[in-house]
Each structure stands twice: as C-alpha cells, then as structure tokens.
Length: 229
Image (cartoon, rainbow, N blue to C red; front, side, top):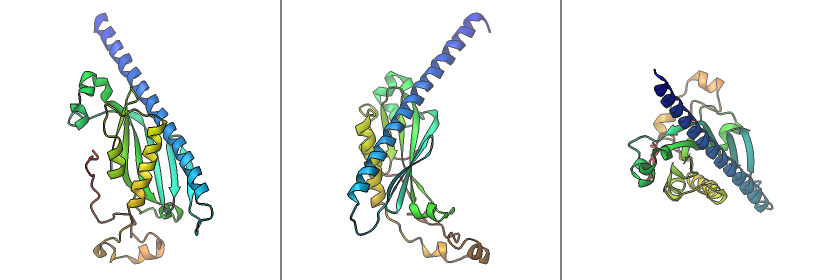
C-alpha cells in the first residue's frame, strides 16, 4: 500500500472511531438521564404509596455500570445499555427517511434494551422463568433517537427525525414502560405445557418445576405496529 492509500485508510479509521465514540457517549448520557428519571419516579411513587392497604414496593437499584432495575408492584423493569455501536440494517424503515439519506453516519446507533420480569422470578430464584424485551431505544451521534417496542413503549417515540433525547423524553420512556408493564398481565399457560413434570424436577426444583413462569408463556408474543427487529 502506498502512502496515499495508507492516509486514506488512516483517515477512514479515525473518522469511524470518532463517530462510534460520539454515539457511545450520547447513548451513555441517555442511559444516565433514564437512570435519573427512574430514581425520581421510584421516590415519588414510594411517597405516594405511604398509607396504602399493602406495602407496595417502588425500588431503584443499580445492577451494574450499564444496568438499572426498577421494581414496582410485582414487576421488574431492567434497562440495559449495550456497550457497542450498531449500524441500522439497510431494510429497516428508518433507512428510507431523508434524515438518514442525507447523512449515512446517522444510521449508527447505541442501544438501550428494556426488559420486563416478574419480581418473584428474582425473589425466589426461579431461573427457568421468562422475561420479555418490551422495547429498545436507538440513539445516534446527534442525540436523535427512536424506539422499537410494544404498544405504549414503541408508539411514543418512533420518529427518528424529530425525537431528541432529553430529560423529559427519558422520563416519558420510563412512564410508558411502566404503563405497558401494568397492562401486560400474567396469563395461565396452556395446560398441555405444564401437565408433565419429572420426579427430579419436582424434588430438585420445586419452585421452578420446569414450569416456567412468564406473562405470555406458551402464547405468541409479537411486536405490534412498531416491529422488533
């Protein structure tokens, strides 16, 4: 490779590395805003719950540098930031927007996943229980973002052109995730899926009994209008 070729390669490498660093820091800033929104929500609801008939938990917990847990009622929401940067696939609807066509670098995003678990799954260490990805947040170099997700989660911010991450948006994401979770009830699994249990399972894992527990276990859990890719 001649010197000109090396310079082109070097410039390309630096440009891509700087782009990914910009995206990473914006995603981390977004994650921090969501964390602060969760803390504020938990504090507010905990205060409101005083004097209620039952002791209803509203708890914030930092599970790690890139994981936040919000426990409320019988549910847990976990917000998990991926440390890598991804390019949106070419067949994704976002790639058809003029916003991305004007600058292909806008298609590089960090991702924050939102998972819903049952509180008892962790409390009783039911390792066979299922959780659900209810949404994922994509953040780019300009702090623009969109969400893929279920109903309340995916419908609020699905316009990559106009949605910009800030404290207000972060709080609305937390609120909509909680709203979806509250409406996403635990259903009895089909009888055929739980009618058999081995002696080993019964004696060794009485709580989990291969009998996985999940809100839609045995039923299709599909994306709504905004599809999860």
